Length: 262
Image (cartoon, rainbow, N blue to C red; front, side, top):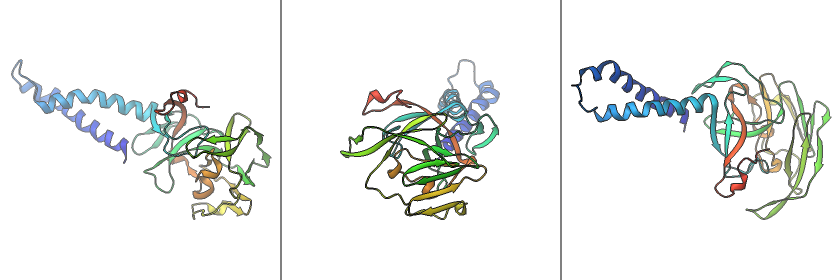
């Protein structure tokens, strides 16, 4: 469901009712006469819808995390906020950038439209930017020939499924974050689709090596063995970017999660 399109249609309808009443119908009503119900509702909803549409389109948009692909950074049920202007101002509905501000950086947690079905929003971590050579071999990450520092931590207990994953901290030049690996999961990538620019990727028994094309990004989930990401369906186009995730504002199951995004 394209909520932005629905909201835009409601904005147009309520705005048209409000404008028609101001310019035409209000002048025809007798002094003191009650507004028709359709005018009352349409005109009263218009400023509310306008405010919500403006905030959601240009400032910040809420999302709910539906899967465990970003554990331990984000858990199922986290409600997050996404900054809509960090990577530039885009026209709502058609998502066309009109003002360029910043570009996604390695380590950013980014929301984007899923390349195989743009009606779906995905959230992953940016691993490679245009021109990068990303190698994920034997569950270790290398960018442009430089291994990303990986520090072991205590194993992570998945409370819902009661099993442990190996936990590490990856340290890049600008950020550090936790990742998970399952010791019994293979390193090779099974089931990669025939995505655009697949010729930029080399698959082997150890994993995958990709060169990121211009205008695209390589993303991965922090729960490395439980995430379908750029290793499987390819690169994220710049046109598909929605915004940068930056804050957990609620979780019904664990109120301590509020504000814990890091």
